[in-house]
Image (tube, rainbow, N blue to C red; front, side, top):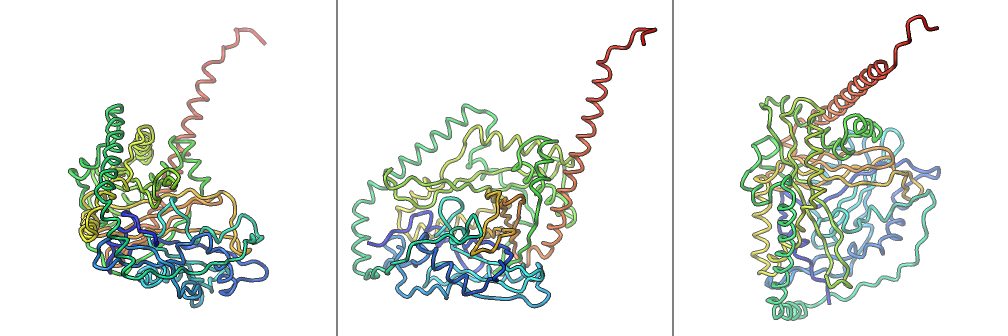
Length: 491
């Protein structure tokens, strides 16, 4: 029988509309090998690797009358060349032109009659490099909990790893009668399943409440976060169908320099850079920023789902936390300290409730109501947080696609209702690469935010150098004062 879509996966489909297509993706920049790289070579590579991601040859099939959540079925007309496409930039092939192309490609919704992914080979970059743009629906892959096609195409060396031959044959698509029969069978067991979901959720919430009681310094619960909404900002406005995209490159060595001088972790430092940039960007827009003002960032965390052997059905598991970005704080070192404290409390308290535990209750209700609930949740998200920031650690060594070395990778994180900006970042091979995805009309000054990010990094580096100099002076004075003066008349 076909695989039933999980409640959380289905919610990404249900919350989607023309202004909020729920596909994530990324842009990777490569330098070609001596023999070059072309569209045919990319198609061959994907054909070799797609057996590792079977979902990428399946499409969504709705159940008649909406009696159950959709199912995944094999696409009997699957054609890899439909999904792997080719494009080129006009001369001079600048990064700005690439970013504009990415924004247009990401603005387009995926075709639901086919597997929900696309990939583009973009040729013509000025320095001889090329880009691969990928987009996959959130119902297929979410963060670290599943494997994306862009991951399996990469190797650790220039030599392309060999894989066994592909013997895939699509399974016959179920008929409407078969889908209805399966749905009715599940309906008979729904009360017991719903009870189990409720029990798991209560257990998760109880454990979290215990952590809150043990650690008074922890953050407030999600209910209180909703009761205390974030301040209004230019980041929370109605959005349209078109997007902007921009990229920022940071040096991991620079971030480690800041960490060594001012404390915290590299992740804390990255958030401090973003906070400082948002502060400067708001001020440049004429938005008043006072001491104590914050922006609330939602940091999603993807957690692996237990296997079937554990008695669970698998699917996505997503947890999230709210972090207050102290944009009202003028001193960059103090901003970093405040962020470090918040994140240390979260890590110590392990205060996360799996989103799947909550959404599964809705998943056992009528799918139509679940769809409405997902849409309402998407619409109300701006009352809980101002923007989404994702952070995925990558390998600190080069990766290759059919012999082409990957130079940089930039995530694209989808927007939800009234969310005009998302920031995705990945650390890779000595660098930290940020992808800024924004509503085209709400953030016409996205390039200004890019400039502010560079300036915020420089501000933290300067503050770090000042701290090191001060420490050297203090240490030097302490060492001199600790030396015993020579006795009068001694040689």
